[in-house]
Image (tube, rainbow, N blue to C red):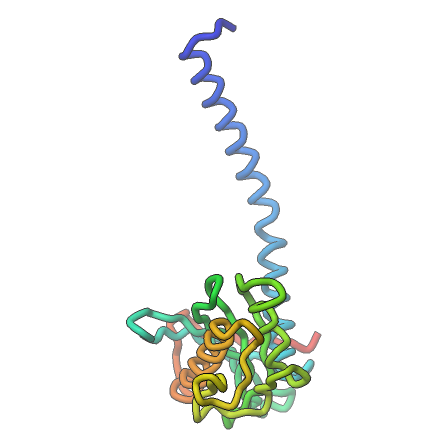
Amino acid sequence: MESTLVNMVGVLVCVALVMGGILAYVNSITKGPISQQAEKALSDGIKSVMMSDQLTVTANDTLYETIDNKECMFIIHKAADASGKELGAAVETTSLGFGGDLKVLVGFNPKGDILGYTLLEHAETPGLGAKADTWFQKDGKASIIGKNPSTPLTVSKDGGDVDAITASTITSRAFLKAINQAYDVYMKKGANTDGQSGASKQVALNQ
């Protein structure tokens, strides 16, 4: 083929179309498994933060709150045991950390006491801010498990009683802000809400 501008452009267009087709095909065959994996991760996370392997999610309510002039989304996964007794809820909450969004799943009992938490997404520095995954756990350096954020949780540098992650005060503040926001939304609206994500559904998590 003669090396002309028209020919080169034509070749590039063909290559782009072929690559686009390949990417679309790969996406179509991986979309299902990725979605299933995400659902399983969330299911396992709910069981973990609610401290129960035998529970049913009775509702998944999506709520929007304006915080610091920004619309924030929360998802409240209400849970009950095998007998139907309310266990509380696992709440998905997000705040801005040092490296980007810090997405946390935190479990509350009906009184608002923290049962457990897990990080769903974060972009914090490995070895520093990323320690939030363990630092505030029951066996961590500054456990928040069992605490009730009716009085907002804050780091000691801000007059609170929670020790910040060493050299990661910004991440610690962002993490506690996410927890406090989740508590406020759960206690104000979690007990009785229609949500904004359509009909709620029941999902058994006792597999």
